[in-house]
Image 1 (cartoon, rainbow, N blue to C red):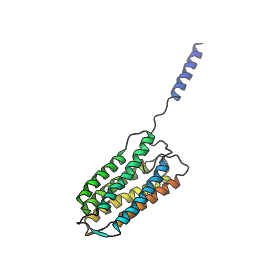
Image 2: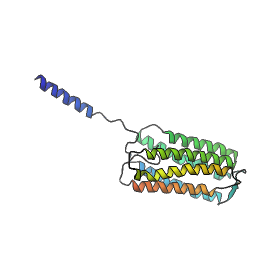
Image 3: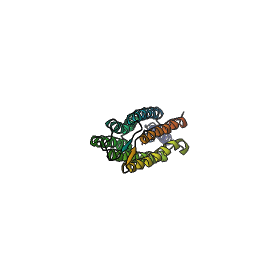
Image 4: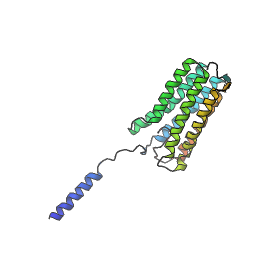
Length: 212
């Protein structure tokens, strides 16, 4: 009888342990990752169209004033990432990550530099944000639990964003700045996000461009 009681107690303990809800991991599957990536890509494409229309493909002296409409649009671009990241983290019920913080700082920094209307300062601020957010995305995608093939668009996008950030900062020191290049940067990033959604079609991977 003593043996039977021990066996019964062990079974009850095992059931109680297995019944405990698992703590959600930071890389837990999320069904919202792909929809968020699609919305983010569409928003980036619309932003690029508006930005290209605002700059008209003009060359702006780096030491002169930045067109106010272009500066405000530049300040709004990190906001797309920030909103997407915060939404995804809220759906997964985890705290905001470093990427969301950097996006928020990018918005504030670009708004402050836009008020100066100095083209060089705005380009440096935007380049700093693009570099930092690109590095974070690259590292996060590289460490993802899913296959590297599925994360390749995000890895490439992060690397290109970091390099573009350096290029934008260098552009600030040149005589003229071709602002249309920033619109091309946004279009390329949106394309990588759309490719990521195709590669991860049917997958419930929680690792997406809005999550870092």
